[in-house]
Length: 186
Image: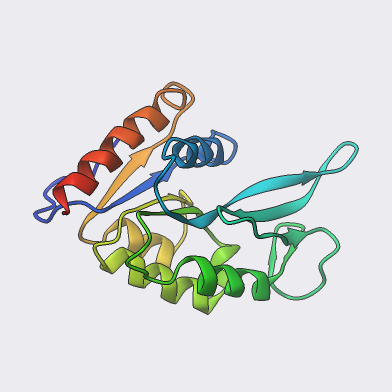
């Protein structure tokens, strides 16, 4: 696990990164499930699988919204690999799930990546969350410019690397980190 050093303010945002397939989404889902009674906002993704291949990605929120975010069959110029990205779905997620609200205990985002950054509304909402004192845990792409690079350097942000060696213990450590951050930010 790597952490940013020299942060003078209290941390409020935990970003987890790592190579594709290492377990970032699984960690995000386990973290979210560890806070019964907390008011959660945000979303996580799951793969849409066909007979032998991944067909796309579905976004799910903690209040029951579910919609296809990217798919092989989606046309248009916004693409990540073979997948067409439904930017209006990401816009809707940003507006409904990432708005700063005093009633939210924890924001959970999977992920800050190229697909999500096609949405200007998503980028704006994430910048507001990252520069606020709102408690946040998010997966973030390992590589990328713009918001991806910017978020990793923001004040109040801690960055952890997920590896095959630490991925099983990381959610429990993240839960402890988030509980401590919540207590110190009160």
